[in-house]
Amino acid sequence: MGTFDADIVIVACHGFDISGNLWQRRHGGFGGIIASWHIDNHVQPAANLSSALAADVLLPSHSQFSDALGNPISILGPHLPLCAAQWSRGQADRLANAALDGPRSDRLFGSFVAYELSPRTQFLRQVAAAIPEAEIRLIPASQRQQVTGKSKDVRFQEWASYKTSILLPVNRDLGFRFFDALLAGETVVADENIPDLDRVVPPAEQRRLGIIRFSPRDIDSLRRAMAEARRIFDAGGRDGIWQRHQFVRQGHMVENRIAGAIRHLRALAEGKLPVRFDQLLDGRMALTTAGGPPR
Image (tube, rainbow, N blue to C red; front, side, top):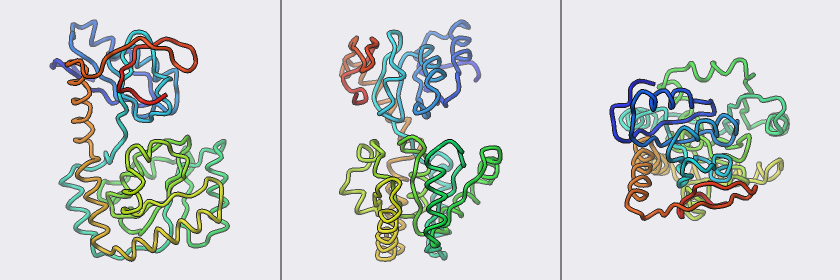
């Protein structure tokens, strides 16, 4: 993290503690505003809170876990969800056009890190055993570089070689893979217990795009969702692929999230998001905004 030569800095804060870097810049003379976009605020609450204390405005990606960031020093601001972050718009357009008429598998795609203590891993093993038409890959946590080490082109081509994929988060979070799947033109079967999905994509729009919800841990519900998602994909054909791609490309890329962060900060500066000292659900007091995440 280099010298901040700006009035406002927006920092993507993963689940790691980056407070040392932020305090170092402040002690080095930076007098502007630091907004931290907490893209992993659904895990490692202590590390996220430490980073939050070094920032001025906090933008949580997962609204149901926003209170963990709350404190009396920095302002807990509005929800800023994740997006498709692996590709620029130009790269995504090039790759989507190249894959538009390519073959796609009918099998349900799902590639996940196998966290052994997570109920998700156990359910995915049940899915792999019970549903032959599901292609579930469970990658040991120690080997996750198998995924992250692939080139951007290869990653996109892999998404675009399937008609539909499964969205099953570890902790009810709306993750990057949701946007990646749609950007590549897939329909999606999604765990119904993801609160932010309805906030980001209205239910009527979900149906149009081919986002079908299933009951968590219910194999039969997943089978029905798979069949419906595949039906919608086949009925929409290349037009449906392009509509899903454009839905993300136009509204859910990194550029859109940066623009959203700037809008939130401008609204704060103009007094359109009044700041208040409020009590969180766990009894702690924190600075929040009228437009902050629901609690």
